[in-house]
Image (cartoon, rainbow, N blue to C red; front, side, top):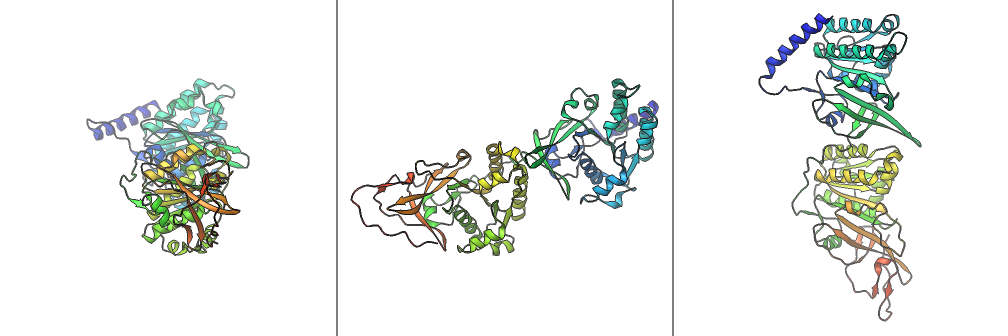
Length: 520
């Protein structure tokens, strides 16, 4: 067996040396077949690498391996999938065929399943290695999977077994498969504490840790790349989800912060309300993040929708992300205010993204939004609302909501998208708050809406509180919501002060006031 190792290894090294010249060896990156994971890995998985997929039961280890196998196995370079006292191949495939990546035509042709259970039970590790060597030499696979490798490890813990035997077995297996230029995966069920000082993990080129966390009524799966030789990957814990497509990974950064494309010009976008545009010196700067804050019923959603419609009139695609009502209901309510969303939807110029599940991650939400941005080439985006956004997240993500929101806004504005977000806050009539999230520093512009009491009437006023990098009017203006949407009333002299408190008081003599303009 040692002779085989030497012969094969020598021939592979010679072949590699012939192709590399005097420069660095080029490591080819293989697609994983898992959407989002290639970006996290920095382009894909290094070819001929020796990898371990570890984690607790039910977190997607086998699905991970199958997606890679189906993405890379060919007739010339087939995949060998060794099962060791795990699920029988027929049972495993019965469930895997439900995923869209599954291709039955590749079975037995490009992908071959071999059961080593009997060999392991009746013989020893040497026999298992011998059988793997026999199959590898006969077929010359491009991909090899051993599932579950934890079963092999337990063999050494029985009678006559020891840790040195296991370590020797692993090293010889790694040399064998690497010399045959096979990309390898060992799958094992391990707890986090078992990973420490484990000889299995020291040999690996790549170590993927999968986990799932149950909190209240939600279950969230995570992926961490603990080790990856030869290239840099995105650090941290990344959300993964299993659907009809198989496994999908959501990068915690999406890599957009490194490629900032935020516009640097002075182009201003209309908010769809002429008088408000005047207060903002012509509108919102392209690429800004705008926060519309106010209590329920003040017209936050209406104003945000007018921003989108203003863009549609200029043939600028838009996206509205909603959490609190369904798209049809949202469009119907907008139509009652003279804002047509349906026509733009049918033309592919507008997408209404409805995100209601209570176990979302910010990374998933980001991916959904970015996919829509790429489809529509949208430059205007509305998030309605931040309160609904937080409620749609799994409990484990809510503690880091501000941090996640910062990453999301930075990524989207970096992609050249102008964002308008709404947030509901309670009017105390004693304070002038912007948001209970303390996220005002994350936004470039803030428009504050609120109720005020004037002579026994409840009226609405707005003020532009902040415009980063630009001048704006400090005027407090009254507005109404009509069948034309939000309408800001032309400036007029007032005898009231302390309007922002919600309880203004009159200065000078009392005069007869005109009633509030007719509104919906």
